[in-house]
Amino acid sequence: MYICAIMVSCKQESPADIRTLHRTGNSSSVPDAHHPTTEAPETVHRTVRLRLYPGDAATGILLTAIAGVCRHVWNHMLADQERRYRLWQAYRIGPKPVPTFFTLGRRFTQLRNDPDHAWLKDYPFACVRYSLKYLADAYQRYFKDPQTEGKPRFKARHFTVPAFTIPDAVKLDRDWLYVPKVGWLRLAGSNLYANCQPLTVRVRREGTEPNPKWYAYVTYAVPAAQVKQPAPDGALGLDRNVGQATDSEGTVYALPDTDPLDANLKRKQRALSRKQGWGPKDKRPKSNRGRRVNGQLQKLHRKRKRDDATHQASRTLADTAHTVVVEDLNTKGMTASAKGTREEPGTNVKAKAGLNRAILASGWGQLERKLAYKAGYVVKVDPAYTSQTCSRCGHVGKANRPSQAVFACQACGWALNADHNAAINILVRAGLPSVPVPARGTGAAARGGAIP
Ligand SMILES: [Zn+2]
Image 1 (cartoon, helix red, strand yellow):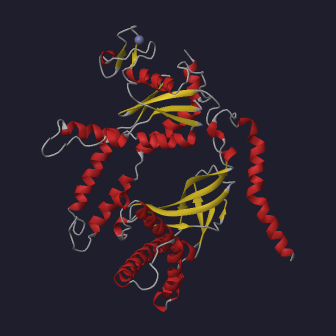
Image 2: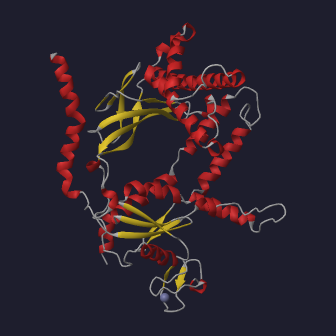
Image 3: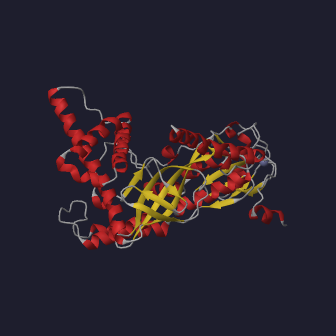
């Protein structure tokens, strides 16, 4: 009875206490209620990537084995589901086999109790079973939209990143993470949300096969008040161009040149396809050299230059203004191929393909997604004629653009950078004043701007 009472009081006190503490502590820094999206939920989810040290090689092998069992169970259950479905289709006996997490989980428990699969009991139950959550989700996505999603597929060993999830009951004590059936492992790296409630952990192996590095992606429930807030007011228009974005104050956010990286990726892919067993239709056993090159290829894939740049740009924008106005771009339509049909072949196909690649490489979508959770409010406006309209007198004309970079109004003589002009138009289109409140943040960039 006594123990029971303690447990109940602990449960009530931990997450709620942190939340109220931060709400009262930070209430003054929360932006005003005039902006619609500042009514954030009480807690939000944030994920931190921390380095995980297995300590010795054997533990690393054990972690890889757990990930391998997850993959095995995925493949096993996928085959099992397909077989059940085919049988049901042929004979229509019994209910239709539905692949939900519940049914797959039940089948997994049966599998685990099967004497032939007794070895499954050496691996953490919850972690392995959770791989079926991903399988069930993959099936759900497929049922919802079979055209674009495609059926869940078998996971091949050499193309699957070894990873597993600790779905609940995460034990995290300062720099130590408890991995079930493995033990306490040390974590390293800066952690903004160390005081928050950890929800799930994804353990993932990165690096190359001879030199594996383990990481823990810890998802926390973070009190909304603790998350970095956007600037309290101000608005910016943002014109996204190939390779760069410009805001309505004229600041240019350059996106990285990924051509050398892309070339390296292509080279590695070619090298891999020449290795024994690694070509598209090569059925021979996979060679160790290919394994090494594949590791190098996966390493290149993890270089997130574009991701880093869009993170930095969206952070600066959110620190500068509460509202960010962007064009409502239809990237899919814009990057459609110019190939045409056999009867009516398109023109400039090569050039359009290059432009498409550049548009996709600019990370417009990424920037927008990151702004959505960092900025206070994101407005989308119609992009028509934003680049041909004068931001001072409103004159619209193709002649206003003597070159790609320069805007020169034919009616009033107003001249400035073309992207800057477009960004001002985008801001105005959202019904906001073109000369914004100087609401620069308090960071180094703002101080730099203040010095003439
Ligand atoms: Zn003008």
